[in-house]
Image (cartoon, rainbow, N blue to C red; front, side):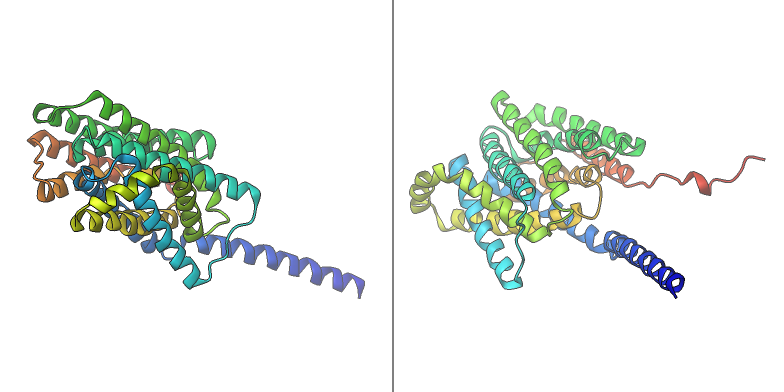
Length: 326
């Protein structure tokens, strides 16, 4: 009897291990099209943010614009979290990391980008910020153990060449301000560092609470800009206020949540590479909305960006599936 019970216990424990492994695998691979849709939503809305910032940047100072956008985003995310009864993380490590990437990404990134777009057009700003995915791939390889896959860096290199081509082309028709370049590169560094901090959090915290609390941390960091936001909102036109609200709901509340959802289901380096699509979309949107039409070289560079993103998405061949050499 004792031997039979011991066998049953061993079988039960093995079943538990198998079920746990299966559940984890299913969570990581089930419905991959949702992760793709989430990433696509993020890219589209983040592209529109560059144009929106440029459009309302004359009404709101960089800090006031960041705070107003984050206030709207925090309220929208909070309403969604309460409606869905989302449980908040309680671990000190998770909360610390959330606060860190919240201040860096929602706060520092937004203020730097808003200031940079006062000196640069939307397309050039998007191109410079897209140095971030290269930094992210390096950071993820070092700190997150994602390694340095050959196709990731080949695709990233192709896309980076595309960014360079667009930048050279834009320089012919647009005055490039050194201050704007530095500010956009600062935004890129904030982005890469923040995503590296965010990835471990998403292993245990859902996309919605991780985004909401991060947005809240950025809002608190930007509270010193409250007096300016109050004064500038009072003098703002209806169109500018609507633009500010859109930046808070779309590119902030929705896009950052869909980003977190997709990031939790793929590597940080691969997710960062998808944002190479943003400059191409910004160029199209900027031409349509702001009348900023880049030169022909920008379109060549945009095509290279698309090719680069496609390469980063290639799956390495499994050596076990290779045919033996005769």
